[in-house]
Image (cartoon, rainbow, N blue to C red):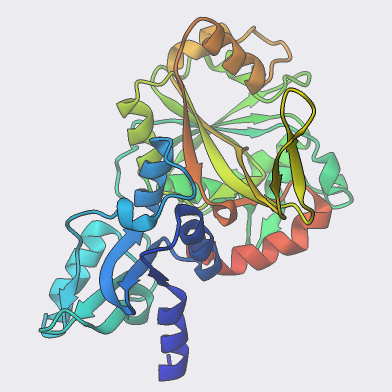
Length: 365
């Protein structure tokens, strides 16, 4: 990488400490980075990670809160004189994508990026080795026609692999060894493809839907197979997130079900008016930015929930969540950024998905 390109890359990951949580989240999306260098008066000040932002949002902090208020007191940085092997070991241990190097005065002297010095490799952390994953692959993929007239949605390619294989590979990097796939439409093609993957280090058991069972109904057919906390993922989405973090969040919160949610922002191109109870103007907001938590289609569930899903009946995840909440159960929400969620469920969005995959999700290849 030449000096100009590297400086542009460094500039893209720098943010002032007066920026807000949503500013940082959007800059991470733009830079395809999960870590930013925080500056104060244009000098190195700290680091902020996607984990820092997620913890703040999980604690119901406002999107307008300044990042300076959530910074960790202790961060991992290097010194320009440090041995590169020592720095690489720290980066690998912390799973960080770059390391700032400071001089004797505490000024930023250099940034070393993991992908500059280490060839692409797959690191498996094994934390989820006993956690099964259910992939919902039974749908017809009507929104992806005409390609799904030929192949099932689960085998729609992103780069050189079908999306379902990329999903499986991502979970395998967290240690997952056992998958269950709920199949129906063109099920034989899915089975044949995965049966012929050479050297795969995981197993897939298939459950056939004889009729449409909704977004979660098919887990009722897996009662005898799943007895521990498990993930459920749609077969047409990717999440740029370490699922070990999601699992720990789910367990720490004693949740029965956790939803991975993408934070979606909408800019209203007009001034909006809020009225009071008397119909009079209470507030005028000029072109506001609205934030919503979007359901990505990836969940963590406790095994007892399988017994609460009607057997072999149409049942959506919304039905299950409403049932849990009605009896006072806990449903967690784990936030990810807007561009950390890739949905290829519609043909008109497929080109955009390919572009995003080649940048933000390239490390999953």
